[in-house]
Amino acid sequence: MYKSLRYVRVIVSLIAMGVPAWALVAGYDSVFVRMQVLTSIMGGAALCLVFWAAVTLIYGRIYCSTVCPMGALMDCVAAVSRLLRRKNKNYFYCKPSRRTRAVFLAITFVTLLSGSALIPTLFDPYSAYARMIEEFLARPLGRAYYATAYSISTMAVAVLTALGVIYFSMRRGRLICNTVCPVGTLLGIGGRYSYFHMEIDPDRCIGCGECVRVCKSECIDLPKRCVDNSRCVICFNCTASCPSGAMNYKSGKYRLGMPMMQSIDEARRRPAANMDSPMQTDKPINK
Ligand code: SF4
Ligand code: SF4
Ligand code: SF4
Image 1 (cartoon, rainbow, N blue to C red):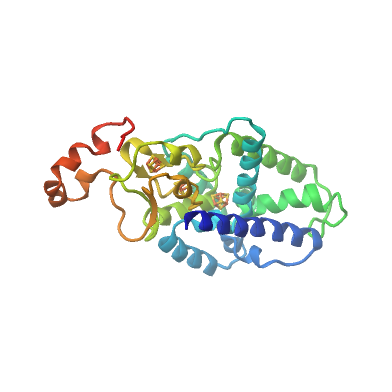
Image 2 (cartoon, rainbow, N blue to C red; image 1 turned 90 degrees about the vertical axis):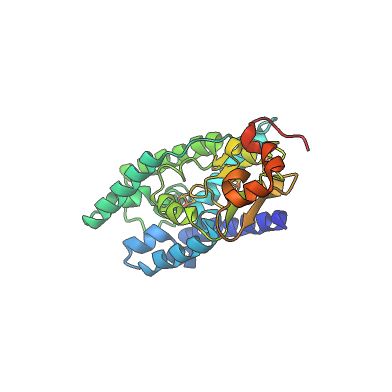
């Protein structure tokens, strides 16, 4: 089932990346523009934020794995990079950059509230994506409908954005999503408490590390059997790769990865299981 979900997610994200690009080049309006969080807020349509806040509180950051064209572009760059390498590049767990995320979020919203759109447009993933499409596709084809005149500074920003996306996506997957992007930080607050979330069943986990190797958000802390759902973009890579069915997209309260911490009663009922639990050791467990 998770493999099918992953395929669906990939197809939706490719559509969400391709349609706005085509619309920008062809000069059409696209529904995807109205679905973008920060673009809608800057346009005065705060209802979009309310909608995505509700969706994120229920399903986690599915916005980042389906609707955002910049996220899809990062995945494409990472996928091509992995294909070109003979040996797959593995991801690894990385601690959250909370301070960096907070700084970029604060800068974006303080400048937005002060009436300046310059910085928010710089950090807004959709605006950044649209800028690259306009400068690298629409303008060379003579179809830059929205750009008034060629500007060296706009081109420079587009080039720097493209270089940043390529460099960081190749090396660290969704690092930009979980550091710079203000939308990702905002949705991450909802993702942390979402009803559906990624969770490791410590009793089924064999400690193979496959989930960590494919997690482009670098948010699986395997020794603690814990997923940082504020950074998880619900891509289903880990669930589809887990050989023992321990990683799941579950509903309800987040269950701590360490059996002894789930409930004292449960721990008392299963002392033997707890002795063998992953909390006792970081080494792979052979069952
Ligand atoms: S974190 Fe930002 S750039 Fe990344 S997918 Fe989400 S909205 Fe797009
Ligand atoms: S935890 Fe799983 S679903 Fe979340 S980003 Fe990592 S691989 Fe994707
Ligand atoms: S068994 Fe599944 S959850 Fe455990 S380390 Fe392997 S892939 Fe990850």
